[in-house]
Length: 151
Image 1 (cartoon, rainbow, N blue to C red):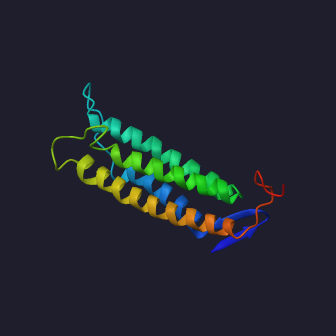
Image 2: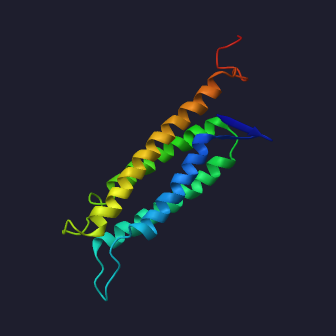
Image 3: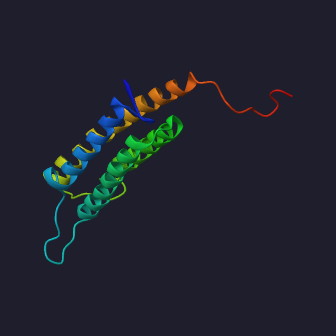
């Protein structure tokens, strides 16, 4: 479903991306936070949490921009960037930045799982959203000539 109000086109998937980005930020920062520094000791998972928090803010900013941009091609390109950032976010905890060695720590049970669930959701919604915008674009006729056309 696409809402067209004064040249701003918003699909349900756009709103879902925005809601998911806000939920992901809340989860990373408040519901499933990683270990906090204790004294002079800073665990690796702290840095993983900081990077994931920064990426969650990036998701939120991109989702607001995605809501406001009326061009279907730009929206499709942003959906591709969502998928790329989601794959990067999936690789951060435990792969790019190591987590705690103990399996009962919040970074392994909470943060890592929260990231995995939401990044899969982001990829699915972004793929559906890109499909919607590309389908709406494919029905329109090209306005400019392609090289060699009309010669």
